[in-house]
Length: 329
Image 1: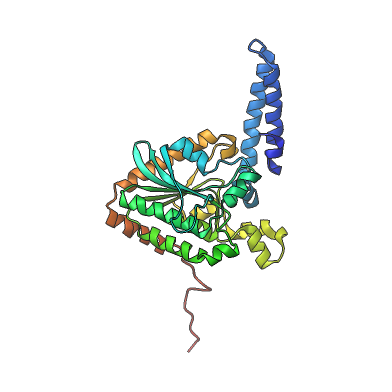
Image 2: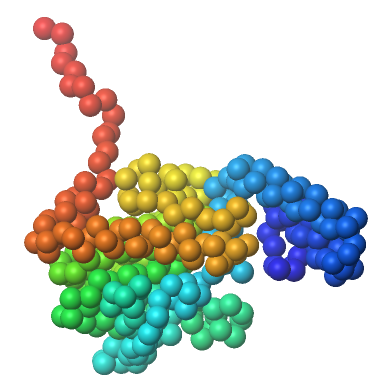
C-alpha cells in the first residue's frame, strides 16, 4: 500500500511500513543487525496501529468503510467460496453490474450469493455504478433469491453500497417498488439468509437486499438510513457537518449492535481488513460457518417466525416521560 492509498490518520502507520520495506530491500539473510532493526520496527508498527485504531471516532470509521483498498464482495467470494457460477440479468430489462449474483459452494454446502460490488478504480467504478443498484439489479437479486428457495439453498448476501441509484431512469423503472418488493419477499423467503455488511450499508439501497435471519457487520463497516453527507446537506445545508451527522446517526457496527439492529460484529485484523484481506476473510469464514450451521438446523416454519419476530422487535422508543401524570385533585 502506498502513502497515496492511506487515510490521514494512517500516515504514521504508512511511514513505518515504508521504512520496513526499505530495510527489507537492503537486508540479506546474514545481516543480523538489519533483521533486528526490522523486528523492532515491526513491533513499533503493531503498537502504533493498535493505538490509532483504539482511538478512532465515528468519522474515521466512515472513512475506513470507504477505504480505496478495502476488500470488496468479489474479493471475499473468490476466497471463501468454490465453484462460483455467476447469474446475469433480471429477464426484464438488462444486467446490472452493481450487483453480482450466482451459485457457489461454501465448504461443501451449495449456496446462493447476492453481492453488491464497487469498483477498484475509476473505470471499474463507472462500470459498477459505484455499487449503486438500479431496479433491474434488485430484480436480478430477487431472481436468485427465488432460485435459492426453490432449490433449498441458503442465501448469503454481501452489502456494500452508498445507496440505491437515484437517477431519473431508475425511478421511471420502479426503483422504490423493486426495493419494497425485495424487502417483502426476503421476509417470507423459505431458506436461511445471512447478511454481511462489509463496507457501506446505505439506506434503502442496502435494505433492498438486507433482510435476513442473521445480519453481521464487519468492525469498520457502517450502516445508516442516509449517508452522513446527505444528512448534513438536508439538516444543515452544509456538507462540512458530515462528521457531526455521522456521530448523530450512530452508523458504526458497535453502536448498531447495541441498538439491536444487527446480530454480530465481525472483528477485523489490526489496522482494518485492507491491511490483511486474507485474515479478514478467515475471520468471516468462521462467522458464516457458525451461523449457517445454526440456521440450517432450524425448521423452516420456525425460521420464518423467528425472522419476523426479529424485525418486529426493532425500533422501540419512548417520547417524553413514560410515567403518566395527573393534576392534583
